[in-house]
Length: 201
Image (cartoon, rainbow, N blue to C red):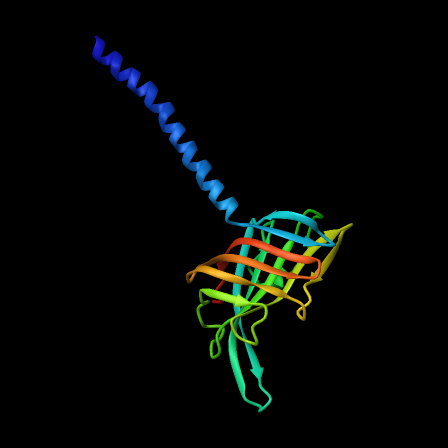
């Protein structure tokens, strides 16, 4: 009779242990997601605070350049959107640029210009995109969208004084991740982020 008692006791212990390990893994997983997708923002519209990114997307377009000799070149331009709410990505910028619905919502945007000769079909490249780059491998068009008293407030970091960089440490066909450190005057965006890559059908 002792053997069944031992088996039953083991089952009683095994249940709580399994639950403990499950909760531990779940906590660690959630912690990693949160810590790797938070940016610290500062502006007159938002104040200074940490922004937990709930959704992030990036999609490419082709940007054209013409030099002083009339020579034209192209480069991919990945538009990155990060927000503390669920972005509507169905129609790319058209839907993600819609007005915010609450004063607690904030959206971060910036562009990553790729290498010379790339276009909207080119995969995003891992590496450093500097705000001070001339044309290519450059971070630009950096802004924050906040909402006060029912009105959207768009704040753009001055491109003439913009400093810093965006480092993409991991890229794939479906997702990019890295760190943004950009500032201009009294505005700044700093932190790690993940963004899903959108593809046009």
